[in-house]
Length: 503
Ligand SMILES: NC(=O)NC(NC(N)=O)C(=O)[O-]
Ligand SMILES: [Mn+2]
Ligand SMILES: [Mn+2]
Image (cartoon, rainbow, N blue to C red; front, side, top):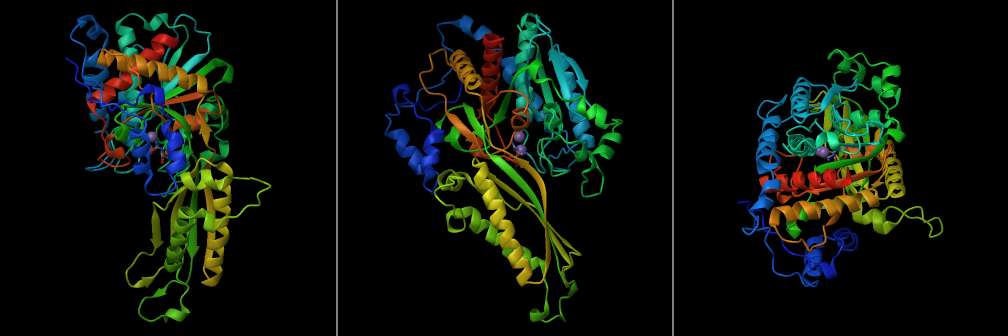
């Protein structure tokens, strides 16, 4: 008997698009209160249960496949979550030993689902079935096999394992060869960009937007991307890099399942959401150099301290991103960006800082820190980067510290394809109906993504659509990241319904 998490019902006649609510309320810290008020005022009926498969139709249970879409998928998520370079925490970065082991394990699961597999020269792991018409445009699906440091088990992995579970069900039912078009699952080698700070390496190569110059990017140990591949017996050249690009005419679309990494689905009590779009992002590396010296003998007035300069710049960044309207101005004519969309979606993070020589009794000679800046408003993002840069250089001049800004990564915001999103929404209804045995009257939530995804890179190749899966407390990029077993199941049923109805 399937028991599925209870879902708060949003009555369909007052269906509301949570992302629009968030746009209007997101401005202040009462956003969730606003959201709740708006939901309650739309006659939320008492929560109806996804209370399990109806007793009356035992046959329905036969197309639920809990042993594959839930039990085996959950077991694989935990198994993959144990493949790590870290001791006691999860870490898999581009072409690391654990990333290679993870790729091999995923490849086994691809073959277990009946797919033809290979690894390309950027370390992406591919599994493909041609279906009835090998020359038709292919449906691409997938997500990333790399992780951040001290990661959760579901970010990236769920999008690979859930899709493979659905394809395994089709293979068991003898339907895989009957699909109307080829289907290809790709486990991308580097979405997080932790090692080289230039994210989407694998998916950008498939989309044809990874410049050859990227192969010379170095990590903290001065190892280039090219070296990292060579250490794994992959000789990447300009020629075979360019060969990785898929012909847009050979691709029908790209679909990615991913954890929400936010609190909304848990808040509204719904297991899945359709993604409306993905915020644009910029990554900077700031280096400040000053006068290294003795902590005990250099008078404060004579110091050129890059640590204090960095601290002032980081606090400035926080103020700029909390209150952009206090820093930015634009004449009403050019309308280059909307303060509304910027201030409701702008987030900035300094996640990494390092100093040299990093000794408690030494005034540092150099400080380096990262900046991660995101918003759905691309023009606004450029304006914020410009404003931060100018004000940071003023800080450095005032403190007689030399500063450089290295632009590591830029990705424009992406709007998901409306037709593909509509198909994913329909498939979600079908999947959830199978689980509950009752018609789903609610509007599937539609959310914006502040997190980046390989779909951003693939949007340069083909139309993209995404499904979000609820995660506990919205927590991600943490070992606390968690998805309910039944929500893993719901994601598998939704993508199975999508493939069955669209292919
Ligand atoms: N889904 C993700 O966690 N993506 C992460 N990676 C990139 N490239 O955005 C991020 O930081 O949001
Ligand atoms: Mn991530
Ligand atoms: Mn991710």
